[in-house]
Structures are given as structure tokens and as C-alpha cells.
Length: 266
Image (tube, rainbow, N blue to C red; front, side, top):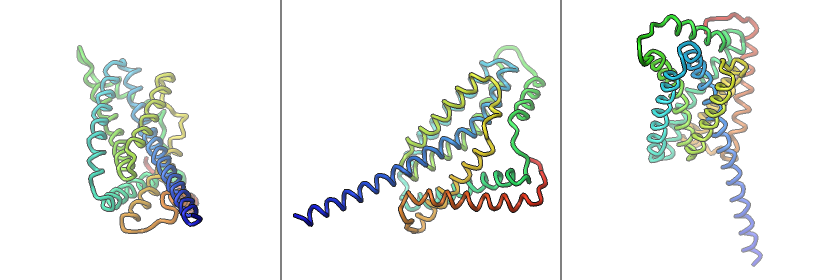
């Protein structure tokens, strides 16, 4: 009787621990997808806003909506397909891709933080897009230029979002959670943009890019490690330690590089 009770208690504790670790992993997936999506959507929003205030809103909004439909279909099609891949192979491949992708973001963020790369200026990007929209010719009827530029920019920025949502979700078995993070970011960015009708220059975009780079690099390290057989202590909870470690070495590199700053082209 006592052994049975103690065994049940031990199983309950293990189940509770697995649940907490799972929740930690899902929360990090949600945050990673939301932050990465928010950064890309701010950049796409700048172009759509510039087209809207210069050439009218109908064509830019139609182009952005068409791109969102394409991206939604892509995520819906590829997300379940990736889940059919053997889990160890999936973790290795997706982890390696996320690691490469995250390190690219992190490299740029470190260079910006150290002064070796110019900070991204959303106001300057908005002004450049407005000037280009004014100089572009316009034929009678539907504004094909505004539609095409809006569609292309939203699709290109959104492809990075789709990649992050698909890889984060499929590898963690939480495509819906990653997609929910992207959807929340979309609602927030579009709502703020619609109310402000100006570039979201007050959004700390460079800081967000640093955070996203840290998270993608940490996820990539974690899943690539699992793919080659590493048994991380604490399972998903060890992601927090990897994130802290990545932040530490990134800030160290930024500080070392800042000793002789020189700004180069963005």
C-alpha cells in the first residue's frame, strides 16, 4: 500500500514536472514567433503606410491582404507536412536552420549595438518609400504599382515569419501556438499602424531584433543538440539557460567591438 502510494506520488511529480517544462517550451515558442513576426511586420507596415498616404489605401491594402493569404496557405500546408518527418532528423535539420538564421540576426544586432553598423531608421525608410511612390508613374484604373510593391514587401517580410512559425511549431509540436504568436503580433502592429498612420519609429526595433536573434540562436542550439543525441538537463527548461548564455556572450562581443567603433553601411 505504501509503495503504491509513493509510486503514484512520484509519477504525479514527474508528470507535473513534464507539464511545467512543456509549458515553458510553448511559452518560448509563442514569444519567439510573436517577436520575430512583430519585427518583420513593422518593416512591411512602413512600406504599406508610405504607399497608402501617397497613392491611396485601396491598392496597398489589397496587395498586403493577398500576401497574407499566400503566407497563411504556406504555413497551413507545410506545418503538418513537417510533423511527418522523423523527430530526431527534424530537430537536427530545423535546429541547424534556426541556428544559421538566428546567428544572422544576432550578428547584425551585435554590429549595430557596437556601432559598427548603422541603426535601422524607420523614419528614413518611410521617407524613401514615400519619395519612390511619388516618382512612380500612375496609369488610369487600378494602381498596379502600389499593389505590386505592397504584395512583394509583405510577402518577402512574411516569408521569414512563415519560416519561423513553421520551424518553431513543427519541431516543438506546437504549430498552432507559434501561429497564434504571429497572429497576435499581426493584430497589434496593424492596429497601432492604423491608429497612428505613421511609421512605428518609437518601437525599439533594433532591440527586438537582438532579442529575436538570441531566441532563434538558442532554439537552434537546443534542437540541433537534441538531434545529435544531447540530453539537455531539465529538458525544455534548459532553454532559459541557453538564452541567458547567448545574451551574455552577445553583449560581451558587442562591448569588445565597441572599443573602436566605426559605422559602416546598413
